[in-house]
Length: 300
Length: 325
Image (cartoon, rainbow over all chains, first blue to last red; front, side, top):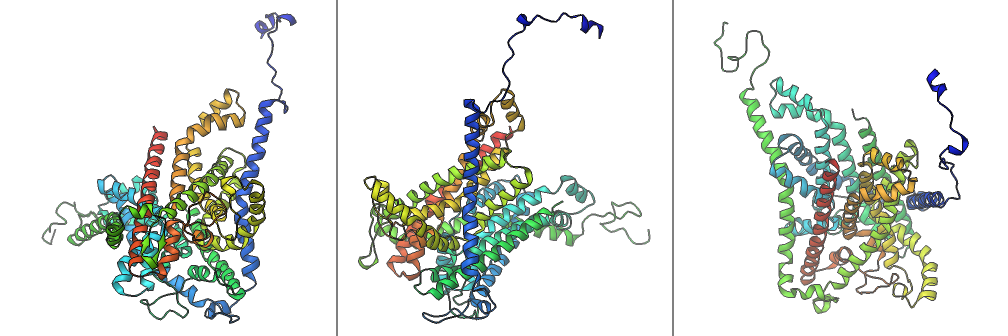
C-alpha cells in the first residue's frame, strides 16, 4: 500500500493518448452495424409472413365450412351444394396406417442395426448414407416406383399401393431418428445389461428400446405428419374415389388429392371444400407435429 | 447339489442367479440380429429395386428416343413425340431461382436465431414458426398460391412488364399461373431446410471464436460477416445443395402454380413446366407409349436428384467432420 503511494503520478503532458472508447452511433462502423441489424429483423420477420398468411387464409376460407357433415358426407358432384369429404379423411388415415405398418417396424429395426448391432460395419455405412440420400428423394418418384411395382402387378390402383408409396418415404426418417435416439442411450447402460448376462436381443429389447422410446416416437410422429400431407405419391397409386373405402384393393380417396382436384374446379362449392379440406389436413399434420414435440421434450 | 449339474449351471457358483443364455435365448438373439441386419440391408435393396423397376419400365422409351429425348422440347402424345428439354430447363430454372430466394432468407434466419439477436425463449418460438413452414403440405401451398400469391403478384407483374418489358426476365405478362408464383412458393417450402442446416453450421462454431473476434474489437456484424459466415460456409453450402435437391423434387405446389406449359423462356411471368409436375399432370391420364416416355422422364429426374442429394450428403458429412477436428 505504501509502495503504491510512493509512485509518482505522471504529469499531464506525459500521459499517453487514451483511445476514445466512447460509443458513437454516427461512426461509420456502428452505423453499418445498426442498419444491418434492422435489415436482418425485417428479413427474418418477413420469412414468418407466409405461415401466418396460410394459417389465416385456412381459418377464414375453410373455417366457415367446418362442421360434422364434412366428415360424414361424400364429395359432391358438379353443381351439387353441400357435401363433405368423409371418405377422404378415412382414406388418408387408412393409407398412413398401412404405411406405418410397414415402415415403423423395419425403420426401428434398421435404426437398432445402425446404432447398436453393427454401427461400424460397411453395410451400416452404406445404409446410413442411402437413408440420408433418400430423405431428399422426390416424393413423386416413390409414386412412379410403386406404380411400376404394385399397380401394374395388381392391375388396379389401391390403398395398399398408396400406403406402400408413403412407406417408402417414411422409412428413412423413422430409421435415422431411431438410430439417433438409440445412440443417445448411455454406453454404461448397455454394458450393465451385457454384464448381467443379457444377449444383444435382450439388451435391446429391455434396456435400449425403452430408454430410447421418446426419441423413436418423435421420429415416427414426424414421419406420419409428413406422410399425411403428402399427395404426389398418391396421384397414381391410390388415385381418388368418390365413395367410401370398401376394400384395400380399390382406388381410395385422400384429402391431399381431393384438394388438388377441387382447387382447379370452376365451382365455388368445391373450392370452399378444398379450403376446408386444407384446414382439416393442416390440423391433422399439426397435431402429429405437436405430439412429436411433446414426446420429444419429455426425453431424459 | 442334488440334481445333476446341467450345462447352464456348471459355471455358476451355488446360489448365483446369473446363468449363461439358454438355447432359446441364443436362437432369439440370432434371429434378432438377422432381422436387424435385413432391415438395414432393406434400404440399400430398396434403392437398387427402385432404380431397377423404374429403369425397366423406361427401357423401351430409352431405346426408342435415346438422347434425343433430352434435347427435344415437344411433348405430343398424339404424334408419339416426346422430349423433356423444356421440363429440364423449367426444373433447373425454378429451383435455382427459388434457392437464391430461400438461401438469402434462410441464412438470414439462421443468423437471426444463432447470433444472439433474440433471447432464448423468443428464439425457440421463432424457430418453431420456421419449422412449421415445412409442416404445411405441398397441396395447401398450391391452393394458397392460386388464391393469394397469384392475385397479389398480378399488379406487380403488370407494372414490371410495362416498365421493364425489354428486360428478358419481365418479357411477358402474368396471366394466371407462371414461373414467378411457383418460385415464390417453392422458396417458402425450401426455406426451412436451408435455415435448419445453416443453423446447425452456425451453432457448431465454438463460442471462443466469436469471443476472439469481439476481443479484437469487431462490431457484431463484422464478427458475423468476417468470422462466423466464412467459418460456417461449408455447412451453409451443404444446406443450399440439399435445399436444391428438395426444390428439384417438389411436385404438387408446382403442378398447381407453374402452368404446365411446354416452353423455354427466361421470363418470370410466363408459364413453364418441371419434370415432377409433368409426371403429376400427365401420368394419371397417360397410356401406352406415353407411360414409357414418362418413366424415362422419371429416370432423368431420379438421376438429377440423386446426384444433387449425394453431393449434399457428402459435403455435409465432410463439413461436420471438419468442425470436430
